[in-house]
Image (tube, rainbow over all chains, first blue to last red; front, side):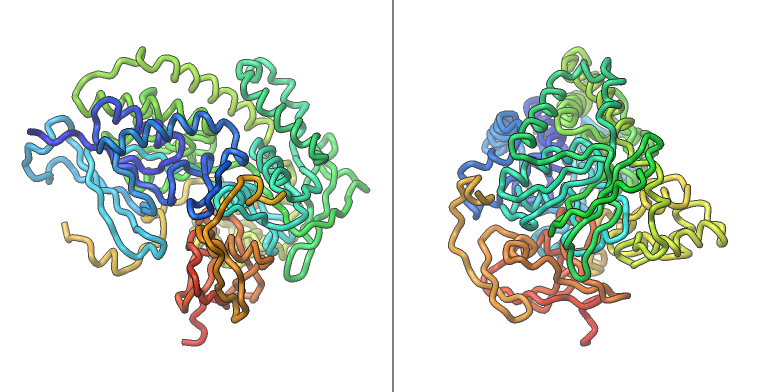
Length: 479
Length: 100
């Protein structure tokens, strides 16, 4: 009997799970490869099992959707159709070209073969390889944080990081928290921290929510999303959290840890209103300015990137990348939240199942998901325009503000590289200053360096999606 | 209210680890970073260049700001590594290999 077609899904967040479910429902054997201890990704991140949370939903929105997703995947796991590899950190996906593929009757449905390389366990020192006929990339995204004086102080964390530590470890970063930056993520972060007992001294949003009104047509098409926003706003009111719209954090204060932030109001010209600065004592600042897609695996496979900044994986209507056998869904194809990721994953899973079995997929079978996808993409494009980083943020960086956290490169050094040294792209700035050369490989500083220098933000070309021990590389077969 | 009460958590038995030699109580399932946060410790690394303190930043394994030395293993991401009973956690200075 011919072995069934095999799909490897990288990432067990909303997109990966929806795709795994849709493909497994149609008879595809699926291996779900994920870095976390439990499925769910960042959006559905749950407390570690050993913490014994009996009411994990208290920190979540839309828990019912998660339960349906989890139950479906669990059924397939029990039936042996889905294998879930937890604690597996994927560092590369490799494509075997058709001509050097050994003759085999293993797979009559597809002409591709892939190997997903992962490091497993907490130490991430042991290598594992998963072979598959098709790959779905659903690695999600990570938070963009633009620098400001004091942002490297302990006590300053990303908004999503504070939320992840709360949801996963059931810990609060401190007692008095300011949530700041821009974007819809700030609402659930502030709400969650307040519900869990932190004093949220202020929610500081640089955007002008009134700008949303100018886009009522697009926004009104998503009443559910608007209701969600209103629910969070109500929660914040009820908990006495004051929201300072059109305000920014201009500086974080402290010597060895955060003790206060200075916030200021933005005027109509989006510049700081003179005399509006005020100090808010706090031990934690949870800050974020939107998100960026993870694209390392796609980039290494040769998938074309596009999107507003050229930093998201380009997909067609079936969620196919331009590399045969590779699909992508969720934040990696452009930031749009969990509901969009679910729709994209669902479409991808159906497309994969059809393609692996050599039949043309029928887009009518996923028409509802496609409509959701269209609506949500338009919705998030409108949100993006409203929640753009505030004008002039780069000008406010003092020359001694650290921009690249790993290599401790200052804004002054970056300005010099782009100014008198004439660097015109991120790579040249990196070579001249080491900004982006450290542990995180520019994931944290690239948007800031781009903004400071006027260089276009390009996706970093990284051969490995995470650090790999030399022993693991040396142990790979020679072929 | 705290997060454990909010989610009605019944964690396994708490255990002790050390941070720079002094005892810290941790819960099973927590990461090293979560245990240190819960103990009121916000920083456990000093940078290679200017020796500035750092702790958790991204919280999801992307930024590498939370590197720490656990049981003499340097450069562990505190936000990913589960804490285990008896762990000896030390502030990591620079690359953590300055003593070599």
